[in-house]
Length: 536
View 1 (cartoon, rainbow, N blue to C red):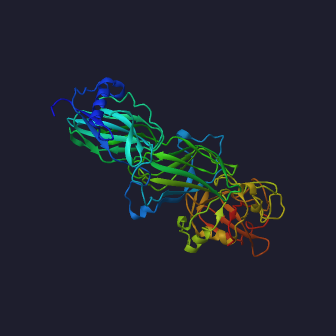
View 2: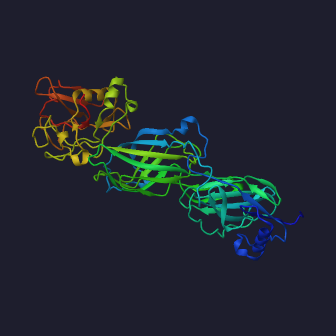
């Protein structure tokens, strides 16, 4: 073998002498089949075929070695998280008030790993191989070609030729795990450049790296295995409704996930440690009614919170949840090649797990927390007139209207919570009992803030607004005295028969009592926060 420039032809079968000659003639006479027509001509030197025996699959979860707890799947996030407005730069329009739940249950689960894996990619999967040559420590582009998989057999050349001069070479490959053709090899692939940029095609992205192949100068060289690994993770976003009158959602658009992101372009080449990408939020997508959507992410290195942004969403054809961010409090790390499902469980009202009830400074017991965890509370105070199809205030920071004990707004007898519009809220809502509000009283820190007090949890729990009461004036929309007090009625009649149990709080205290000389009278107008669950 002389010292003249040599060419490497990356093929997929050892070629016979006649085939080698034919291929040589094509290369020297047909420049359009060579990505870089400015590359050195072979000058009659021997070509070096490189065969590929097998192409390994890159299916999610199947090409990774995991710990035993991972192989069966695991839950990474399971918590109640607040539904918040996006940053000021994407502020919610004033004309579009938020009417959805103040918190949702976010669950992020890593899907279980398959116990078996195929040894090869399926038939007809396109992939592209690119040859780089090491020149003085720098890797420079030589040529590229596309192939399709052929099961356990050698792949099929579809376009281009892989050519290089002899020496130390490195073969880089990428695929979108698709049977769709990858398009023309870009003219931007420049001979002797150190990397190539490829477009993001919105599908699975996986890569192959042969590492350095030294001393390529033999008549044959075999790539015994081209093994692809995933560079993206797969995330399925699921919306779940419960406790709504209609268990449906509509018009879910403008959704994106912010933890990793998609890539507008990839840069691939040995000198850049194989793959890098420009990342940001995922591109926006929609979720069909009562369905799911799956996106691909470029995982970040390290742990961070994960955010699902919702552009538009209507819950149960009534509650608007537009332009909101739902962000985990926990930091998690998503990994390439893994498959995840994130579920956002929208529940009408507020219900905390016992483990999330952390305001215990006022004597909150384990039994209190377990009992409160069985109850679901309205997200706002009752706010309707008349005697039917009631609604509650869309925010915990609104005061709502006033109601007398066991009276509807029009003065007729009945539990006003039972009049909530069943088409929106479902059935089973009622005014809380004395025992239930007493448990709330114990599960608080009695800190008066922003005109009210938090119960159970300062961000996910129940916030009851102060607003006084209407003394001996019954129902009404205003006109209350002592507006720095909070007065919430129970469904429990008092001992005298002319009063009832009421929860009252001030800036320094909170108590449930029926002994007040005037503030527990049946004829007073009180706030009502409805509850759902078996009476306690």
